Image 1: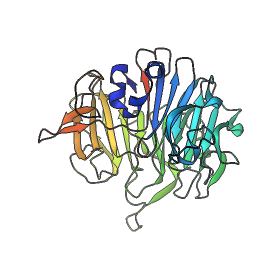
Image 2: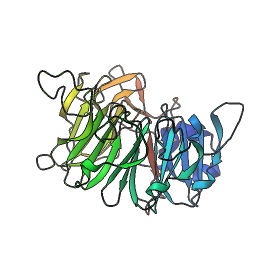
Image 3: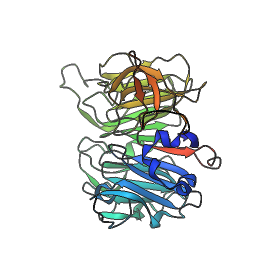
Length: 383
């Protein structure tokens, strides 16, 4: 998502305490963590810094000790990533992946379930050597599992597999990247992970899902057969949307829900709807894809693996539609939003994006995401 520099501090309050010279030098920001309390940013000269909550060393700064435990107050340089032209980050509950422009993957943090894809747990980034012969174009992390997409459209998975979220046909954890052979004939172009489920989009617009399904987040229904018990998981990829009937161009996963966007700007959603994150006007979970109606066509969608909030950007405006959990509010239908500039007056420490039916302000939801500075990102690939 591209964000104007004038709106950056309002949207990401953790940046408020940065020195002005460092703030002005930021080219890309990655916000992550269950409470969005960890930050990595890249400067114009390709230096990489991190600070915030440092779960299991996933900030990648080594044995950095202070009086605040695992909370790193001041930005620290991640030396192993500086100068490597990092294009993308993805974070799980306690681990981090980074992808370089040259198609290499670096990892750090917890490796309890094999989610790093190496044979050790480390607190500084290390390249995943078993994928060194592949050119990686996409990465995604669930809570404890990882996916990587190659330039050839092949998909590798590793880590926690209790719910079959690796799509390998069993429920055994993997400690090394393993090819997902059931999608080998499909040309995968995009991947996403929820907390314990995974999604893949093909060049033909087909959408496949696998993993945990207790809330309907696979979109495959309650049951395999009317007499079967509830289908709580599926460990093989299942086509949930046929691109020949309804071609999908983008997909994103929340904690237990999925949003998909068609080539003609129509949103679909399925899975958990407890906070209204499917934007249907109710809180009923959806076990099959259901349309999300908006006044204007949608151009971009966003949620994240630990979020119960959904965002969508229309083709006509730069403002976003928000629905689901938004601070203390549960927005059951998409609401048009506006992010306040840094120099606009507001008594809130967060962005005021809209007002509820009682005229109370609603704060801007920040979720795991990349933020590119619009005045410095013209030569970047946007993720």
